[in-house]
Figure 1 (spheres, helix red, strand yellow):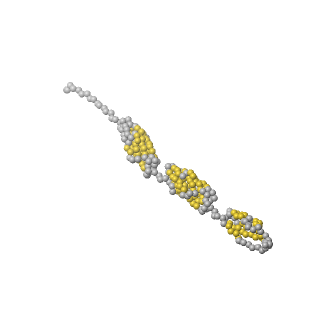
Figure 2 (cartoon, helix red, strand yellow):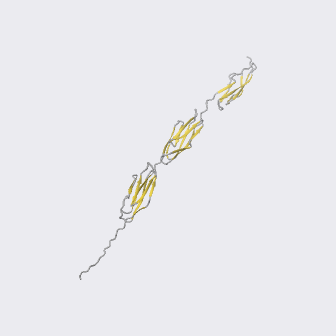
Figure 3 (tube, helix red, strand yellow):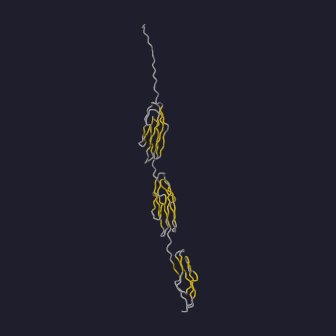
Length: 258
């Protein structure tokens, strides 16, 4: 036989564990104005490499966009001037979902819709403006010189408009305060017409012995004042020398010896 002998040796090699990844949140929602957010990326080993991928131009990764190892990823969402939208950031096969509301057009309403005033004196009033969003801007404008906005001529979000109305010395009138297409109507009664007077009968005759007589006074309004005056000593007003509204004047005529 041969004088040689062999030794068998066994060699072992340990394999590196596979990298695994997880994210701390599944997503976040934003309103139309946008904003910022973050989530944690956790890896099974400190040497596990990764790179975050986004699928929307309006999402910007601002920090922590790649590995190796565990990190906090930070991002920013731009303001949305269009419809509702959804985007994603993907890390190690895990998808983080970002949803954002669309820009809603500002809408406005007013309450109440108007007010009425008497002619005789100035007055004041107010109404509420309600907006669909707190950042909706508006301006109140009067279309009549006799309506003055004293407070709340403009605002952002819901508010109140205060105004005054001057006295009316003419015909009935209507004016408006307009807020972003919403019209608040102000009406004011006409001033009374000028007083007019008439008497009936217009004259009366007496014989030399004299006597008594009367005539009625008719006015155009019940608040019209008047005074009766005589221009002869032999006529005496016995009743109704003055009045307000309709009335009667009574008088006597002395004997005439001339």
